[in-house]
Image (cartoon, rainbow, N blue to C red; front, top):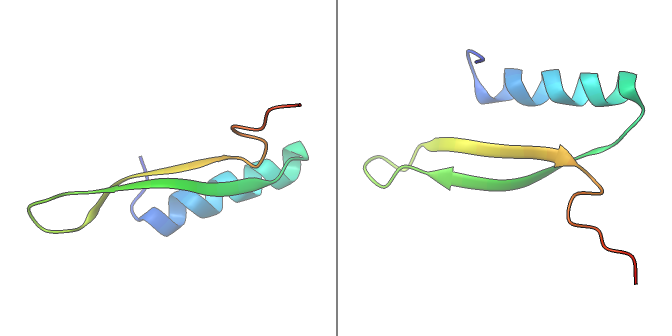
Length: 52
């Protein structure tokens, strides 16, 4: 768990850079009560990619 959303995103982007893959901010869920982000998916940029 991270103190802020940006700290979590930065951590994952740094990890991806060291591990030699790219990232993509994929999906966001917000709380209905206050509109604040409750969940953010940061994934490998190949997430959902399908070969034809």
